Length: 108
Image 1 (cartoon, rainbow, N blue to C red):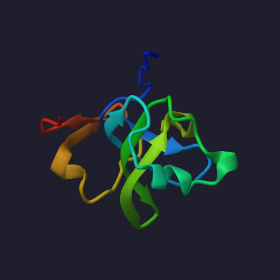
Image 2 (tube, helix red, strand yellow):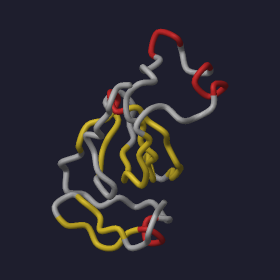
Image 3 (cartoon, rainbow, N blue to C red):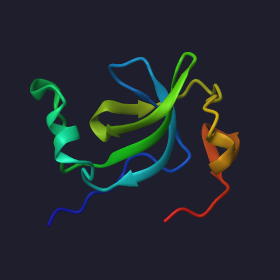
C-alpha cells in the first residue's frame, strides 16, 4: 500500500494550475474518494491519477463561489496574499496570516 502525503494544508490558499479559480483547502482525501461517475465525467486526456491527494476547496472565480474537488497535480500555492471572498469561509475559518486561514471549527 502506498503512503500519500498531502502537499497543501487545511486553511491554505491555493489556485488551479489551468483554470481561473482559487480557494481555501477545508478537507483533504489522501487518495481519490469521490464517485466513479464524477471521475468518469472528466475528459480522459486530462483525468488525474486516483492515487494522489484530492482537496476540497471553498473556491471562487470572480463573483462565483462554490465547492471544488481538485487533485494535487492541478493545484499550486497562491502567494498573492489576497483574501478569499467565499461566503462560507467565516463558518470554518478565522483570520488569514501568511496565506493560511486559521481553522475555527473541529472537522472530522
